[in-house]
Structure formats: structure tokens, C-alpha cells
Length: 468
Image (cartoon, rainbow, N blue to C red; front, top):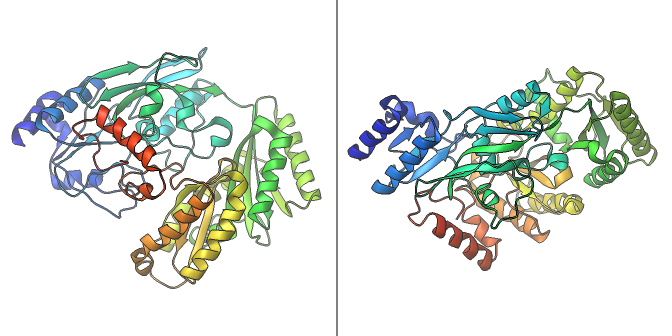
């Protein structure tokens, strides 16, 4: 492989071909630090043409490549396996915002742009890019597109597939498809854009995208409501949609155990209620009319929910600082669970109407099969996406739980399937769920996916071992 690496150095510069084991380490270990792969090198191209040239070299030398953005994924989709035969293609140097069109409400950005930087650039132009998730300070647009990321505002704005109008992609053969069209209507054949979004780099490498922008809302209001059951949360969702319509942009379910974990590990974050409740909903309104209009909507909603005994308490943020404090409670749940120790994560979706039944059924199944396990249940109730995570019993180390991960996954995933759901709502399949998905997709669906992979990447060099 010496000749291959020398040719890579010629294409992108020697300083951007990292072959030292110590220097490569951060690119080879997944975000949760559960797995470390091996690689020939980490390649850091600076533009689309260099990406294409590197892909052609990989084709010529039959070298697999693993595209990588911020490496914040949770399913081993952005790290190589332990064979040491692949290269990691880091796209972090492709970080330019190429154009902003305020009339078309679009922004053209490169794949290595950090999500938070895109949000800030949109805000500076008096626009909103609504994708928001916990890793936004380090995840990249390319990774968001590759996994079809969702986040906290899917209820109003949709996931990344809904937020993207066009792509630029380097194909598995090293050709460049320039599909950076800011069109909301383009009915001219197969939708290649949607094919590459969510494919986790297994069909081609996304190098740039045209993203949708929205007007900045005139007001944002945040409230935290306390209730007894997930069914009550669903009743509140129905009320909120009736009262608030499209102004409802966030609706997050959190169990009491979630917030107790946050309070334990981050005591500076005060819980706003004197007494705890079994369930909470964090909701947000984004109003394009006025603060007064948003306040009136929220006031009527809370009054109606209290009168109907859907909720029994609520707090409404009266300042930006208070709103941030409420959202920090939600955003620190995964961090607090990690501080608590090893755990098993599930990123699942079920029909919204079945969420209460799913939680009740699956909680009972796990309590029987794994006595004492603690369930950290939270997520985007408004779009049916739950992070249904399992922690070991109090006082026990996580190693015994991790040893039974396959058994726990079977209980959770079979229950998801029972309700017609999906075992991956927004994290993707990666390597972690590649084999698992075969239990739940039909042979016809798997053959269709495999046919697409073979047609676009016949040498199986694009992120091999992931998705299919």
C-alpha cells in the first residue's frame, strides 16, 4: 500500500495523509468509546475534486473507504472495522458555506460544516435552519444527511431529508454528481437525492447540499408540564396540536427517572417542581406572529390541559435563560446516563398512538426478563421516536448488563416490531444493527436494498460492512 499512500499524498498533500497510529486514534474510535477500528490512513481532502480523486485511487487499488464527519454516530457507522484494510475519509476540511439565497430561502453548504455553524450563519442572515440535536456543536451536515438526522424539531420541520433540496455527491466510481438544485419541485425521474440521504456513505459520498431556510420566528416559548402517564402525554399532544397548530415545534417526553439522573449528576440544574411526577413533557412554540399571540396560545393550552386533568402542574419559561435551562434538562439526559455507567441504547420509533402501549408492554417484559433494570425513556414524542435505554440495577456494574445486550435488544426490538415500528429512528444502522435489521425487514425489502448497493457500488468499497 506504499504506492497508494504516496499517490494520496500527491493528490491532497502529505500533511493531510495521517498514517501514524497515535494521530489516527481519534478517527478510529466511536463516540461512545466502545469500539476502536484500524485503518491504513486517515485522508483529509480539501474540496470535492480531491474527494473524487481519492475515490478513484481507492478504486484502482481496491481500498475500502469509510466517510466520516464529526464522528458522533452511535451505531459504528463512521469508524472502520478492525481489519486495517480501509482508509478513513474525513470531510472536516470541506467546511465552506458556498451561497445563501434569501429569496429562495436556501443555503448551500459543504459536508464538513458543523451543524451549529450553519445554524449561526442562518441566524446572521435573519433565517432559521431548524435541525437541532445534542451533538450540534460537533456533528457535521454530511453526517446529518448520511443518517437522515431528526432531532427535536421534526414535529414541525421534518428530518434532514425534508430539509434538503439538492446534493453534490462523489459516486463510488469517483465521478461527481452535481445535483445542487434549490428546487422544491423537480419531477424528472428517480429521486437520487433521497437515495443518498440516509445511506450512511454506502452508496456515495455527500460533499455539499442545498438546505432549506425558514423565517426567524417572532417568539419562542418553552413550557414543562408534569403528568402521570405516557397516555396523558399523548392527550396533551392532541390538545397542543388543536390549540397551537404549526406553532408547535417541539414535544419531548421524559420520565421522572431521566430527570432524577440529571439532578444527581448535574446538581446545578434545578428541577422546577417541588414534587416529582412520573412523566414530563417539554414543549416549545415558535410563532411567526408575535410574543403576545404565542403567550395567548400557550396560556389557553395549559388552562385546558389542567381543566381536563391531562396535566397536574406546569412551568412556563419567562426568559431566554429559563428556556435554555429547561432544554438543558432534556439535553443532559444522555450525558447523565453515561455518567451513571454503562447502558444499552435503543433508538426506536412506533406509531405515535401506540407509544403508551409500547412503553407499558416493554417495561413489563424487561422487568420480568431482567429484574431490577432501570429504564431511561425519553424522546421526540411528537414524531414517535423514543430513546428507550436500559441501565443496570442500582449498585451493579454495567458489565453484566452489556453481556446480555443481545437478549435485551431482542425483547425491545421484538416489541417494536409488534407495534409496527422501526428499530432505528434517527441513528441509522451502521455496523451495529446491520445484521439485526434482517430480522425485521422482509426478504423483498432486503433484496431491493442489496440490489441498489450492488448497482451503485459494485466493488463494495463504500463504507463496507454497514447498512447492508
